[in-house]
Amino acid sequence: MSSRPPGVPGGSTPVWDAVLAPQDPRQISGYWLRARIGAGGMGAVYLSYTPGGRPVAIKVARPEFAADAEFRRRFASEVAIAQRVQGLYTAPVIDYDADAAQPWLATAYVAAPSLAAAVARQGMLPPETVLVLLAGVAEALQSIHAAGVIHRDLKPGNVILASDGPRVIDFGISRAVEASSGAITQAGARIGTPAFMAPEQVQGRSFGPAGDIFALGSTAYYRLTGELPFGADAAVFHRIEPFPITFRRFA
Image (cartoon, rainbow, N blue to C red):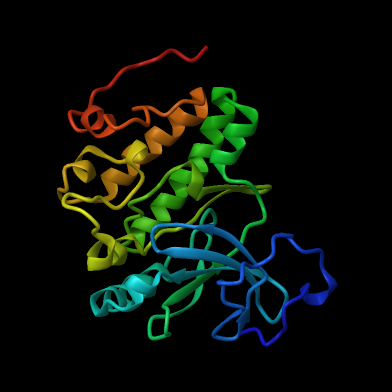
């Protein structure tokens, strides 16, 4: 773990210029935090570095999860399994601590925009380009599923467009979040991103690799059209649940 104080490791150029807010931690189990780079269902994500200067993303659990013994148990189990994923198109889990005051995990950080950010900035791409991109994401899912992991939240925001191909991130912890009483704020709450959920996930049924493939198709549609396949309003669940399929010609 890194004992380097906040600063640019090894004299390299910092990836993020954003400063930490007063309420953000400055260090997690020896990792000095440089910037808050995001947030998700589990908690906040921070940029840090290994002792050798490699950037890592540190995801820290929210306090309500930290107080949940079932979350900690599942978190330790799920992350240990996620560490087995060794795909060329995934961001590997490299460290974690389920017993820390706030459980955390570290993954390799890829200094590149997400697919969601690229669509927002550039719009749709030619089908040939999208097919190459999606082939990499499909290969990532193959590696994830081979390790016994289901992503459960594949979406454009979890696909990073690195210069040498896409990287799929944020796999392996959704089940721990879903099992926590802290994740359920209302009856029928679902873990995931509504616009990219599979019908079985919307219905609360058993969710397997096929659900990730459904999300892959929704992601491909989004990249080709710049539009969400089922919309983003309050009725999105009702459109997905019956599994309506419409075909559009891409010329």
